[in-house]
Image 1 (cartoon, rainbow, N blue to C red):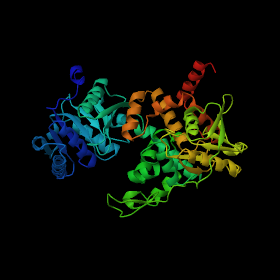
Image 2: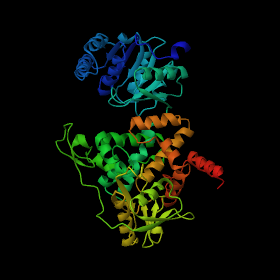
Image 3: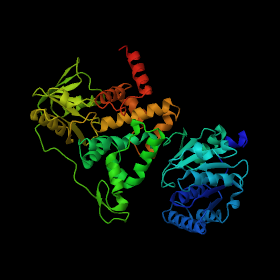
Length: 514
């Protein structure tokens, strides 16, 4: 592969081949076809390539019906689509993308055969989501031209493509793959060959922390989902999302990443989720997972789930005292004033909101209510003004008056309130802190740039903010302080802040002179 050729996207006149004609293979083929390439489809099972070509023709017809493609464009695309009966028919390909079984020997054998067929300038790519790109390329004579092109399902609709460089991947090959994905209208994000790549590595805490809160009997799935949606700003909660993905699929990815990191406690799978999988309760596709679904097997089936726990109406305090800087929650001061609550401020000490009955309303900090005389914690919100729900936590020793006043205060601000158990770090705060830490660790280890990580997490899993941007908004020591407190209370190693996060926090302290 010449340096000149590698510096730009593969020309639309060059052939793209897709090996494997399942859902993902067909989706990738459609993307390349609509981008103007001649496309060859190959499948080891006789007749499958022709079936896939017919299915793609149907997809193009539907695009015409929806006015997303004109009839002439459809006809031209179909003229460029060629099912192949033999692997040798892929010889003229400039790019071959594989989407076959997630089994290392199968992929290695396939690419070994492809290497004997295609030209020296052909880029070889795997769509694997769980296997090592380096390991797949390990048996090749020329592993430098091998990359990961991880599309997200459905490939024609979702914009993100992770462009993964294996240990032996040439920079020129990775650049050409990146530029080609970009030319196809996708948003590529580059990363090194790490377990889970960007999205599946950094997203683990979104599921794991919710499951941990559930296992600690802090809250039920419906409440946790509601808090993460309505307070954290996430599009879906982790319980409903894993039901949609499939509990078996999500748990397998979690277990794969955990094992690839030598069973690091930071990636420990959930025992509760394992029990679901063992019971065959895989979510929507089986009719039951964390929730029950009506009309199992149909795309439109709806979840039958309990309502999230919501506190009954309570009287708001007429006056409060805000002690210290509430940090990410400082907007609450103006909101309380606007709501007619008399707010007095004290600059020293805190941070907390002193309630009339001498209780304290404290931002989640990784500690527990039981440690203090009369403390109610409140969770982190993406946007305290825009949030429609807030979570509070208290211990059995917290006075009823303090809890009632805290509930009434947030109800006065127009929020639904969910009171959960005395869980350190609560729900949104511990989830975001872990996401921030995983992202910082990935940047420090050269997995991807901060920009690519934020792009991948926003587009790959629809997070409201990338974790790097979230960290900037919260402050360089916010996540470190919360995780340090969590680690002190749960000293398994799971919550120990990464060295990268420690360095960030220390640098922030140096800058402020504290």
